[in-house]
Image (cartoon, rainbow, N blue to C red; front, side, top):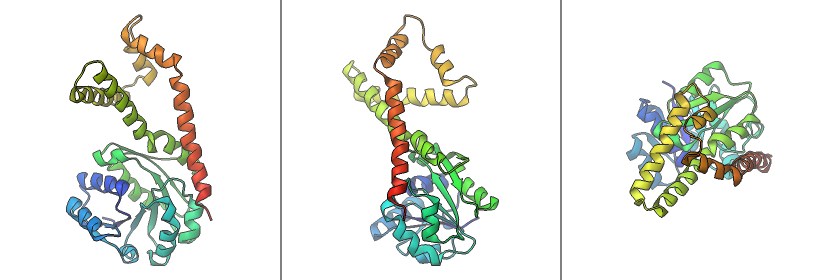
Length: 271
């Protein structure tokens, strides 16, 4: 089994590590770094993995290094690690807006690098991750990285780095879209007379069921929508309201804005 080190033990790293452990990855093969003793102890007690505040010593023997720090400090972290990496290690960045060109300039032009855009449902083994690698990344590297993200949900390799911005718009930021919709559905359910608990359970179970149907069905989402929409019925009335109020246009603007922001960030954090 490959030795895997997470630089940064925050929310995204914890989601991925938690999913990996649940899928049978050995805790002894995983290390995470965190600046404070309390954060390190939390990682150790929660997942049974090793934890340290020394990034350089942590990566010295690592086969896979996952950079899970905020974009604002990525440059400093990467430059500090560059001379400590194994020659045959692959570095995986899960930070939005950090290009492979920037990572190569900080880590060295001989480094195998993968950009990954996972999302937080990785914690419950339902993540979605887009991946893109530079030319120095071997098939063996890709297979090992793919195993990590396949363990916590669905992952795919995209054809160009530019497509990572589309991944961010669809799935990287996507969970927040659905959480917002669930917030609204729960609130309206309560306004219509349901208890908070019942409204929440009905909304979340409906989202889960609809998502599962969309995933396993041979029918498209449009066909599934049509199947549940009876002429003159309640669903048709609700969908008509969505259309009149411009729901599709709102989603298009929001997702396009997310993709554009990712592109802006790549310029903000480039050398």
